[in-house]
Image 1: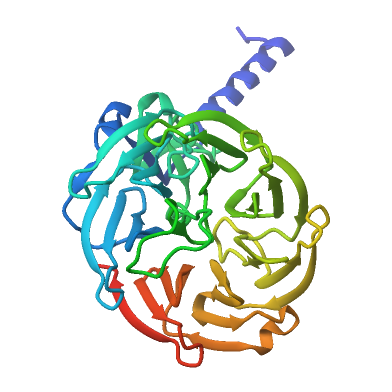
Image 2: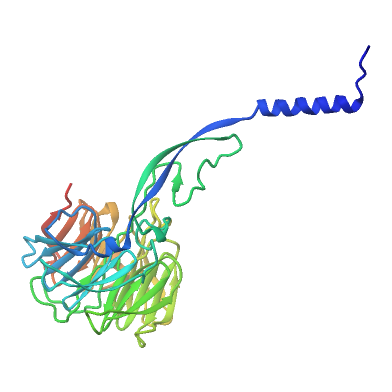
Length: 440
């Protein structure tokens, strides 16, 4: 007997055939990508690690600070080298303070204040061979603000390293994300290069003695790329967004007084005449310290986005702007701005000079020092701010340094090559007198 197919049966058959074809044609692909997974240490382990150690080679120099014939150099994220500079022509590397997660430092009396990841640590350095932790203000800095832990889980401890892993996954053709959603793993399609920013400390000292002598006051002196500075009985520190204030009237027991919000992308801090000059990627802020517990903003001047350290002398602030060459600066200009601050509430850029790729700078008695990237260290007579570019006193193109500390007749300069010291007592014959190179 001949079978009859109704339209409903035919439709069902066609639909079944369609589904079968979809299943057979399911598309999958293999995706290969790199993931960077954090390596954690516990807070307890990190907090128990501050101690004196034997001298070590300088490998990744960061901060630089001078006090009482000693130079302190931060080894990025590791601790602080101690250099005996009683003879600047023959400095001696004499010790190391292990401080995990360290970038910045400032010193008053015999107390060194340093960041250790999220904490502020007060360390007695009266015995350099056996330093003592006197106090620790815990969790006063944002997690990941100055190290590579930003993308990691703070509940798991501190991310002290990142391990590269090659991940191979089979995914549906329509999914190009692979495993990018996995928690606590940072991924990208090329080599991950965390941009560690090396910022030197600064201080409120005005008239330190020559190298080899004793400071006239109990505070050290640092460079222009500061995130820490001390003014009288207060330690000030800037994070990405805030100005943190600590009462150090009891040197051994700093007290966190809270923070003042400034803005975004804050980078440096420089004290002058009871004011704080704060550099950001988009401008310079000026804060009054008439009330040292709660600094108040007096004015702000904007500039194009770029990295921005600032130093001050007399009626002028000197600011270098540089592009990032792929780092966090993300700018497109390289220049020196001379800002008139004679009216502190209405600063304005009076002169601008082209530079190569400047970073840190320093000024003392009208002599301006600029770390200008591949163009090296430049020294200018800045007594006439309208003719700075015409008054280049010296240029050392054979070095690249990131920050300087001008002392009396002695210039300290720090960079990837190590610590350099120049005698500039004769501005017509500035001489390199010593160098401690970076180790291998």
